[in-house]
Amino acid sequence: MIEVKIAAIRVSLVSPHRIIVLKQLNAERYLPIWIGAFETEAISMHLQGIEPPRPMTHDLIVRLLKTLGVKLRYIYINDLHSDTFYCELVLGVKGEDVVVDCRPSDAIALAVRLGVPIYVHEDVLQGAGVVPEESLLDESADETLDVFRDYLNQLDLGDIPTD
Image (cartoon, rainbow, N blue to C red; front, side, top):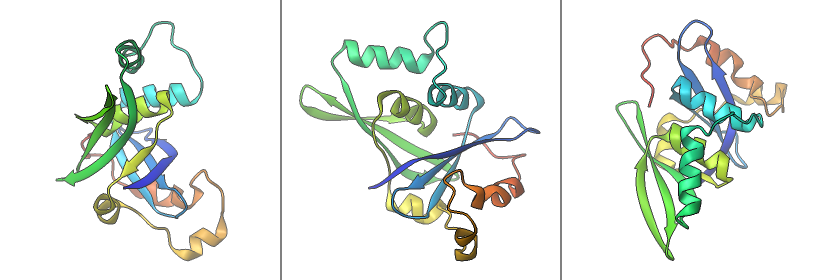
């Protein structure tokens, strides 16, 4: 398992598709994942500190977990098949780990709310990860992913399914 963090969220102005870009900790390897508009809003709003007037679905799940004494230990993006990412919530329930299948976008929305680690399987990073060319890395050490601006802007977002 390789730990990652959210590096950027990209929104297309001409289509409904969004990309969340995860960055491997202590390495220059990135994982772009297509996510839906609602999940993008849920993640972005929380990262920006925006409080909705009523709890969103992910906020409700967090409240349920806390009320039931269940701890989200971490999320694990563990597989990739036919351009679909698979993810698991690893929950601590009465001292034991319980694994629940989940879409990566929903899992990330929960992870940012609860401040838990995000992990990715090495095979997933090998298959879908992006490593910028060394010349691009030298131009900018900025964490805002300037090295990927051209790459992400060239992506055809027309027929990409969300997770």
